[in-house]
Amino acid sequence: MKMAGSVVLLISLLSAIAPLPSEALNVRGHLLKSKTFRSPPILLGPGSVSNKYHHDVDFPRGHLAVKSFDAEVVDENGVPVPLHETYLHHWVAEPYYALKNSQSPDTQNLPKGMLKRNDGVCKTTLGQYFGLGSETRHTATWVPDPYGIEIGNEDKAPEGYEEKWLLNIHAIDTRGVVDKSSCTECKCDFYNVTIDEYGRTISKNYTGGLFCCYDQTQCRVKEGFNGEVRKLFLQYTVTWLDWTDAVVPVKIYIFDVTDTAMLDGTPGHSCKVEYQVEECSAENRANNECIHTKTARAALPRGGDIVFSVAHQHSGGVGASLHGQDGRLLCESLPTYGTGKEAGNEANYIVGMSTCYPKPGSIKVSDGEVLTIVSNYSSVRQHTGVMGLVYILVAEPQEPAPAPSLCFSFPVPWCLPAWMSSNM
Image (tube, rainbow, N blue to C red):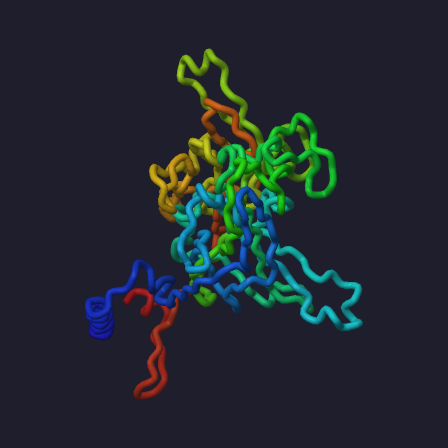
């Protein structure tokens, strides 16, 4: 029809005059919005650790569809800080519900806040919506069209509460330390730590990990080294759309290779978050077989189409994968290691993880399907406090939308029947 041809011509002319970035107009033409924010300051001296939770951080407000969340550590001038100076162990972003009128006598017996959490499977320990580590600069977080992560829906908030966001940023300053890898792997001997942040005695069998590099701990620094305390920030850019019926919501699931629920019958999920890789034997070393493989199984609460997946590992990681109940490969995520000194290309650090973007509808999982996560690490040497996580976004089956009607206002208001407009 002439009208349809005119619309196509107009769009073509506009595209030629002002080319747009990839998917700047998406989900049936709705405009993408993007804004960059900074966390509260992170104060770090040589060898020091910051692992703080920041509540009510800057974040887009309203009923929105988040399309991406990208972050990196920068200094006061916005200059990216390399990992060999400040190691970004992890950052996570998570929504929560805050009590609107906490000073009112009527609300004194109500909790001040409630974590919102993702959809599983380890949401008691890994409840974040977004989160990465050293790989953050070169790991895609884009949610493909027409999908989006729904936030800010006031109808879903408990009465008297509003949605806010928190950040947890775990950073380790390795300037002047005796051994960088021992500090980044949180080896207890290098932190001279025997009790955890809650005052509990750390087991002698626990060589290293999160229990030994908590907030305000100190990794061993070379004698005589002096360095200033620096003020750093997590700089993060959020891209989003206003929520519409054109957006297909996705559920966020995080699988942890330390989850032992299906192995020992633990009620719920037993996600320990971190584990240890022991050095391989001399025989395996001689045969170039120094790969440590760890696996776990967990049931997916609700099925649908996997539209995105990525793994999180620490240095020494050589990749992780997720498999269906029949053994089929759902996603394999592989690390990229840096080769230089500049931020984003730091040698011996994971600076990116590959992502999976299946063709829509091509990777389906069922309600209750048991999935297997596999995490591989080099075991040429011991690694402590490593992680093997896999994030997936799942779009549940949607009810088919009714065919739209094409309406006109001139010379009088009238509409074509839906069956005619859908064939135009």
